[in-house]
Amino acid sequence: MATVIIEAHNIISRVFDKSIQIELDLKKDLFVRGNHALLSQIFMNLFTNARDAMPEGGKLGIEAIKRGDKVIANVSDMGCGMDKETLERIFDPFFTLKEVGKGTGLGLSTTHGIVEQHNGTISVKSELGKGTTFTVCFPLAKGKDLPKSRPQKELIIGKDGQRVLIVDDERPALDALTHLSRSLGYEAIPIEGPAEALKNYEKWSPDVVLMDRNMPEMNGSRCVKELVRMDPNAKIIIVSGYDGSGPDGIDEDVRRLIKGYLTKPFKLEELSAAIDKALK
Image 1 (tube, rainbow, N blue to C red):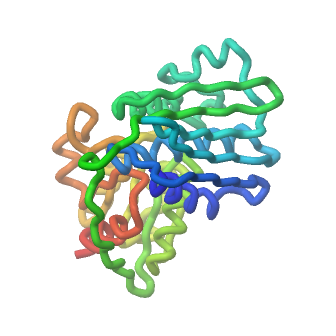
Image 2: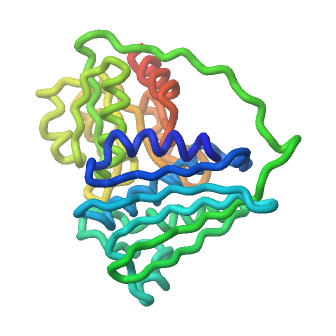
């Protein structure tokens, strides 16, 4: 689990405001068996919530330890905190403290579901005006349960002048994708919402579009259809915290229109390969 936390930490340390002081304390041998992308989503959601609770800045503490046959991670902030009534609803679907249009209310509900899928538990302690701590606990993986290490894949760097249009309603995810795309040599155009993307698509003429799937203004699937109607040759990759198949998957008609599907957060190597494949 240390690798998952470090990867998420590396993203937020680049995109979070410098008024957020991040303290990372990870012990050794924090092995957990599970889906790398889904585990990453847990911590990206918790880190983002901590950031949002500290609009004036503060300390974000990230700690992970091994205790007996458990791996325990604590994510704490020095933010506004929550009252008892809010704490009782914090994991309910569609419950949100954000402004209308600023969030779907699915972040902590999704986090709770992912934790349970991995046979883990999540709890929260909070006090108004003093901050909040989320505690996530997973079974420790041992011996034969540990996955074999895989060799690193080579990064595929973009050519000069190639543009990537990035559409996402969550600012941290948008900033992270923008940074990753630029690190691969692409000219990145970050857009916080699909309406502006549709309005200016022809002017920007991007080579590839990275489209978030779940946005309150207009979902990614609908935006994909609108873009392809405007440009039948549009090369679009959907990015989402949900898997592309199964009960939460996308419709077959949308799948035929896109050039790829990435479950976020993902590794830089995966992004480079997906963009390169779409361009071909």
